[in-house]
Length: 157
Length: 179
Image (cartoon, rainbow over all chains, first blue to last red; front, side, top):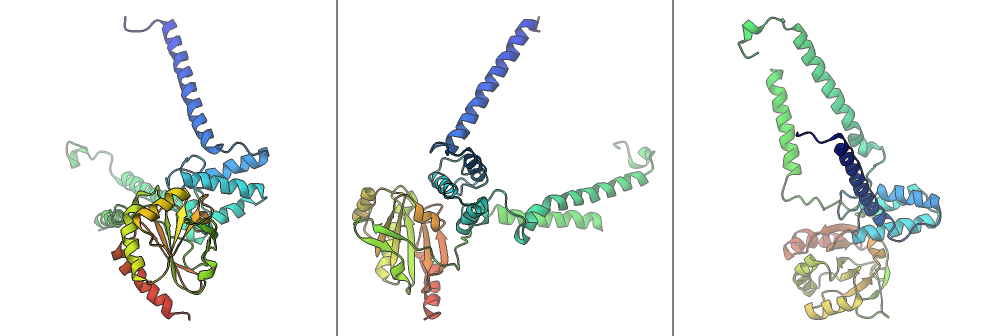
């Protein structure tokens, strides 16, 4: 009698979904609040760019948050700065340049590909290559080993 | 041979990485300023103590000066205040204060009660000047040379030890070079 009746499990599933929905709504609400603390920009195109740009700028006080997500004072100021530059007709590049000239490359979550950042962008591929070489060598070694070596190496293998 | 050398090399590489990454003396909040070697951003604000008095760095063009970013809400700023007072008594270079995102009344009170180490304290209530300087935390202390270039930035509470070790030699060098 430990299994719940089929009806009960349906109710549980529905409850779980409702709960997940509520929690999801709350996180979405929290994220939106930080972005739109000053109200939406009148132009929806600018608003989209505003959201994209602030997502890509690091909040230097909290470091692992973007200025879109952070409620730190500095993030609020930097959002205001981005907003004003957008309204003034500045390009995305101009805004990113403005920020990097003042706060350094570190302010960008998505650094541009240039000689200085080559290591960051190249590291995953180098790791992949290294891993591939190791797997290849191990596989080759295994292939060369005789299949019936149990008697030779002892009881544990 | 490889079988032993490779893990050993991996160990050495990791050890170096950890020695750097886990070094307790390394402050992850300390970021290199892109402003070093570049012209100091100009500002024209008003004095904390007198809102009708202008404070800017245009008048400081051919002298070495220090810009100290502070605020009354900043706890470590209180910590460094004694050191700033002692430094101002040395009369080596003018210390300009940049009061960051603060309230004028509170800032006034702070200077009245704790003493005023600043030649002039600029009031940056909305933080716009601080953005120009790339300020991201207080206290921060900048050193500007005669040509108006930022030559050093120190992030953390100022101490006399830091002043003697990091600032005085740079000030002497800045005075020697470039008449």
